[in-house]
Amino acid sequence: MAGVRFVIVGAGLIGPRHAELVLEMPDCSLFAVVDRSANGPSVAARFGALHFNTVDEMFLYCDEYGVDYPDAAVVATPNHSHASVGIQLASKGIHLMVEKPLASTPEDCVALIEFCEKQGVILLVGHHRRFNPYIVAAKEHMAKVGTPVMIQGVWALKKCQEYFAEKEWRRSKYHGGGTLMINLIHDLDLLQYLLGPIQRVYAELLPKQRMPEAEDNHVDEGAALTLRFANGCCGSFVCSDNVTSPFNFEAGTGENPLIPHNQDMAGFYRIFGSHGTLSVPDFTLYHQNDVPEKDHSWWKPIQAERLDVVSSVAPVEESSGFMTPPPSFDAKEMLFPTGKSQLPRPFDLQMEHFVNLITGRESVSKCSGRDALSALLCIEAVMKSIETEQPQVVPTIV
Image: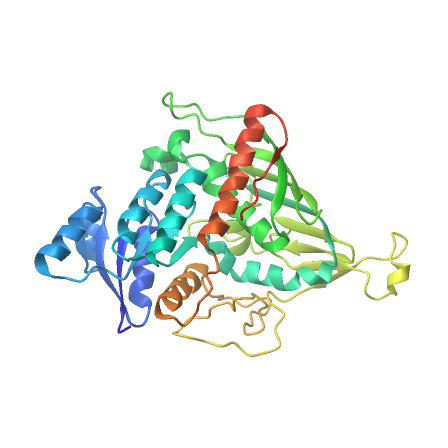
């Protein structure tokens, strides 16, 4: 393939960021921006791309002027429109990177997954944190805790009112709003990535502090969860977007430039195991490796060892200007020592992976449609648990 031509569908917060990455990627170009809002034309002009109000309008233009359809699309529209927009694009053979959640309902997820498979279209889902060096590191270091027994996690901050005022759908539970769908889904995806499938969940809503502006705006502000994983590990997780707190993924990793990086952050995830406890993102490993295993007990001192962001045995391997985590995420080709000021950006790594899938340099999606469906089914179970006040079994993905 000579080059990969992109269209960005959605010019809100994340669409322009993806447009920037496309233009930074070797052998990639930005054909168009599709967005019906007032921001659409200016965003397209900023990146030197064509502008269309709708996907159908773009198709008509291509047909009328004999222009090839784009090779790839980034779908960054409101959550409830992901499936319909994705199916439109896939019908023309356009490969898809769809922002999370893949869709607002499991049924829509399945429809999009099956349609992409039928069309032979690549589907990558934007759970970009799987590419974050801190998560690559957590995966690499998991073996050091022995058998995982329990997990403790938290995602907590206070969103400003401007965030909700900017996009109406963020205030509507019927259109995929609320911190459970927007934010908790990230963490449940990561916990499943680190520990395997979540089997059962029980959830309680946190007390609300915001006043709804309309009848359809009663979005949640977070919940407290009890989790059981298929491997027997159990855990708790608390999620809130309306408390004053530094304990969240963004502050701990510095991933979002709009949220101040707290470099002293410790323990937004704590993974407790038979041989040790790993705290993320500080990567402190608590263990008793200095004494024989038979003598491990509460009578012996606990050692605190600071690990590298990734323990690596080989130099960094670069491709196309970025570093892509190996498919196994064993981190053997990555080197991010503790204290390094500039780590690879997850969105960069995700975009390179998408291009590699399209060009055939890679063949296995690091976040497939079924991975995304599994995360959404966990959120559905959380919602149902809240509604019924009972624990819920998470359906198994076949």
